[in-house]
Image (cartoon, rainbow, N blue to C red; front, side, top):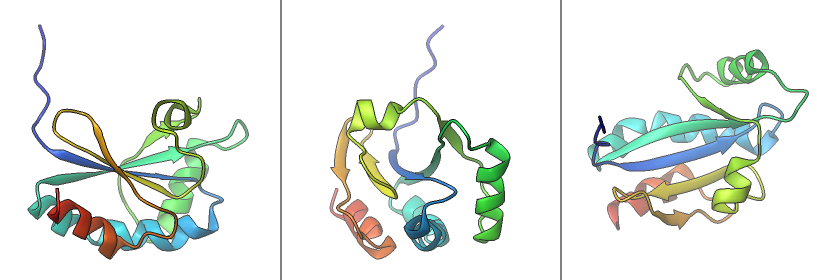
Length: 120
């Protein structure tokens, strides 16, 4: 049985617990999740962990950044291989057909991400 995927745009925010720029960007983007949803999007957090980083360290980082949200883990460089993510934080906008429509340039703000959803 195939379960159809919902028709939403997905904003993928890739981050790491030790990433200093992630400390600023991720909480700002998370604070805008209601606006993302109003524009038909869903925010998906992905912790990119090295071999020596634990899920608990990732959860602890989010908590210390004031973010209480579920997240996925990329421990095998999937985002690097499949989407070309080379540095963190990284933001991708994936459309309803599961195509990557936008890879945010470095230093993109939460405002830029929300604006990008409006133009899609």
